[in-house]
Structure formats: structure tokens, C-alpha cells
Length: 133
Image (cartoon, rainbow, N blue to C red; front, top):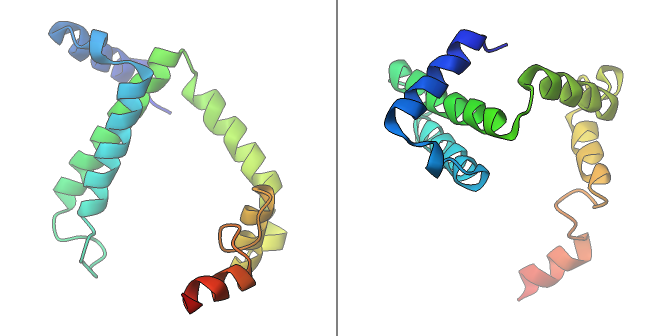
């Protein structure tokens, strides 16, 4: 996945600036979210795929990845292991034979796994009550 050289380059970058004292799991998680929002901005109000500025997208994606790598490193998590484990879990939850060409089935399975009905756990009658107010 990510080479050890790349991980070490990130560690060196952080160490050279003495930033590791700020890199708590909480702060790194916040930074991932902030950088992901910046990546999303590249597509905001733009019907164009790819976006107008592909270089900016790559830079924002790199920021997200760097913070994810720093968080995994800080937590002592092997990225290959967690990605492989998550893929196995997701394959079981969404078997290709059940969800291919059936997006509604994928949505149903998503909400069922959370113990909720489709639509975030709000029943049709609750939706009707909300819209009546």
C-alpha cells in the first residue's frame, strides 16, 4: 500500500518541526475531516468531472492521505491489515451477487446493519408528522 519510505518521510517531516506533540489521535482525526472537506470543495458547485483544477485535487487528496497515515502510525495500526479486514467485512455485508445492479438493496443492507429502516431510522409516519408541522 504505502511504502515504508513514504511513511518514514512523513515521520521525518513531523520530527524536524517538532509537531508530534500536537498529533494526538483527536487532532489528527479533526485534521482528516478538515482536509477531506477541502477536497470536497474542489467539486462544490462544479458539474465537471474531472474538476477544473486537477492539481489542487491531488494536493488535497495528499493532505487527507498524509493525515490518515499519521493517525495509523500514531495508533500503531498496520494499514494493509485494516484495509484488508474492512474489505472482507464489507464483502460479506454487500455480496456482489446481491447488490450489483440493485442499489436499493445496498441501501437496505446499510440501514439494516445499523438496526434502522431506510432513511436514517425515521419511519414514514414520522416523516409525515414532520412535514405536517
